[in-house]
Image: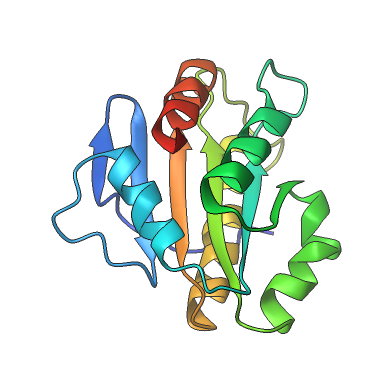
Length: 166
């Protein structure tokens, strides 16, 4: 499971309670979430798509459909929203094996009440973060740009991301 933990890329910067990481996406000089998201969207080809990959609690108050619609409107490109780990076995296969047309926005939640995995030396939060990091690495190794936003305060940070998209 986590015996070989995926290395989590150090945060490029932190805005408020959102940690920002990127792979195959140059964020040199970028210091805010809005600009980071715009840089990701600038990587979109005319025939490209945006994949939002959510490593968060599906039962929270987050308006996933609002985010997907905001991204689709801002980019005028097809946009998908997938909950991990479910999407990894369906659309995730296309992201990795299909044509190099996607840009990837990962949302990872950091929980204040993280629980230890029984019998292991890691928590469920660390498991999820490692899964996201591993997926980002595979995508980046295939030349796909990945922007990972780690949300410490998911509900408020989600609103910040919606505002950043416009």
